Length: 317
View 1 (cartoon, rainbow, N blue to C red):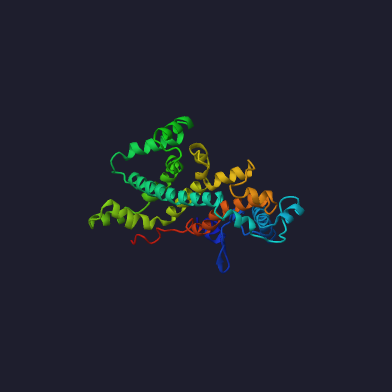
View 2: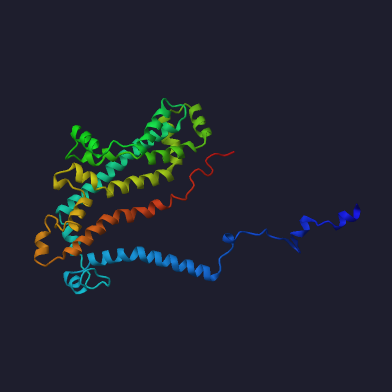
C-alpha cells in the first residue's frame, strides 16, 4: 500500500515549477498579442479613424473655401487654399439660418430639461416597488414600445390640441422615451436600499431623497440620458416638417434639408450666391458644420461618465 502511494502522481507537484507556481493555461484570446498583432490592430484603428474623419475634413475645408477654389477643385475641396469665413459670416448675419439655429438651441434646451424632469420622476416612481400602481404603469409603458397608434392619429391629436404651428409640437410628441425611462429605473433600483432607508428614518421625503441622494449617485446615467435627449431634439426634423407650416419657425435641420436636398437658398443668401460672391456648395457645407458642431463639442464632456462608477464607496460596510 505504501509503495502504491509513493508512486502516485502528486497533482500539486505536477504544476509546480522550481521557485514559483506554474500559471494555468490560458485561452488563446487571453494571450498577450504579438508585435504583428499590435501593429495590425493599430493599422485597422487608424484606417477606421481616417474613414470617419476624412469626410468631416472635406466638409470643413469646403465650407472655408472661396468660390474660386471650389470651382478649381470641381466641387468638394480636400486641400485648403485661400481660407475664408464668408459663408459663416453670411449665415450668421441675421437671416433664416441664424433664426433657425436659435430655434434649434432653444427647443433642445427646453425639450431636454422637460424630458429629463418627467423621465427622472417617472423612473424613480417605478423603481419604488411599493409605489401606488407602479406595476400597471410599467406594463402600459412597455406596451407603447411594441404598439403605436400610428402617424395619422398622432397628427389628429396634435391638431385637436391646437399645437400645430407651435413650438410645443416640436417637444411634446417626442418628450418621453420609454427606453430611457427603463434605463433610469434600472439604475435607480441598483442604489443601495440602506441609503434610502436611513434617509427615511431621518424624516426625509421622496422628493428630498430623489434630489439629495438618488440624483447625485446617478450622475453618470443622467449625463448619458441627457445626451440622448439633447441629440434627439437637435437632430429632429420630422415633427417640424409635419406640424409647422410657417417657414420662419423651422429649426436648423429643416433649413439644412431645404438647402441640401431641395437646393433652395436660405432667405438673405440668394443674392450673394447669384452675384458669384458666395458658392452654394460652401453654404451647404457650412450649414452641415453648424449642425454637427454642438454634438461634437458636448460629446467629449459626457464621454467620461460612461465608464465612471458613481456607486463605488457609497455604502460603507
